Length: 206
Image 1 (cartoon, rainbow, N blue to C red):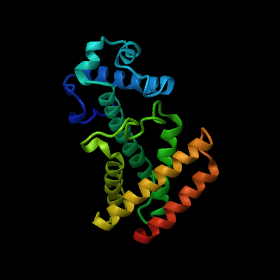
Image 2: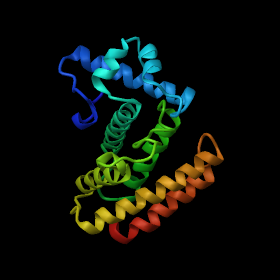
Image 3: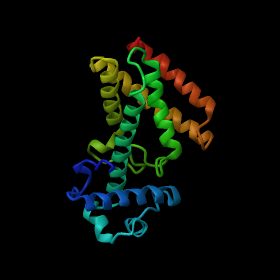
Image 4: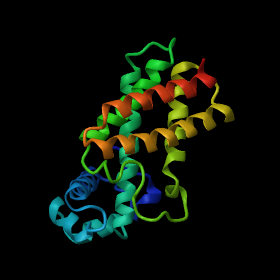
């Protein structure tokens, strides 16, 4: 079963398995429609029809489409972290560059294959609101710092946290550029992004 989005992004958290399955179908439908119609034309009613649930079921969890997209972003982040953890399970803890490569490769894999990810990866395209969802890259960086620290036996101090945040911000901008240049991600820009990550993070990981 997919992880349930954090309670603060839901009107009501599912308790029973049937409710959790319904929530997953709603988020799956939201992701599919994002690819088909874009965020501006996304509607809760269209999501309900695609998911095969009453519109009341959507409003049981979400007050509006923005809340639904935020929940999808949280689910994407959980999937991203889980995917990285799976990749790290096969990597030794003695070299950090393959670990950083795994972080980038998992993001690229999701960018190319996960429905709705092009518009809603870990945050929504609408103007930010006040609250923790307004700066998703901070949450991404915090989760990555935790993963890297655990795998490489590092102390997650302020220097590492800041370096990971800067790397996340820079990589986010460059990968957006790569996918604007090529729907599959321009290989040359991706290679430059990887080189940038290695060169920058060497300051704190070597």
